[in-house]
Length: 99
Image 1 (spheres, rainbow, N blue to C red):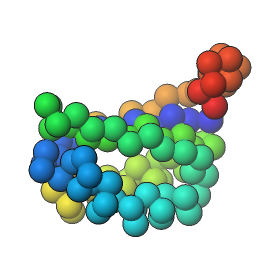
Image 2 (cartoon, rainbow, N blue to C red):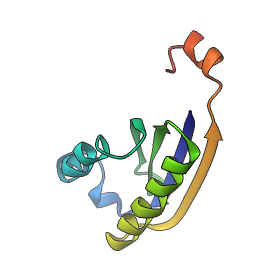
Image 3 (cartoon, rainbow, N blue to C red):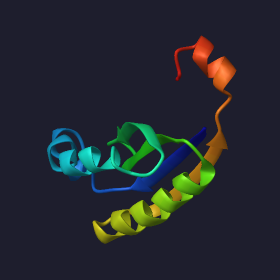
């Protein structure tokens, strides 16, 4: 299992309820991505940072998604994309209800 973390700068006026409304089609489409398990949507209006914590079944699927999603983010005004991949320690994560 791979954790994909994507953070980026985004217009603070597009956060909160506006992002919740406008992002619904994207959120629904994520469920159809190859190997997608889950996502936690994150935002910080104080810093102008937005992003997500994604779980995928393997690195290849996470990388394919990050490439496609990164291009989509840039097209809607995101900047300074920071994309990172981590292996998930599943036995410990299960203890803490992380998976």
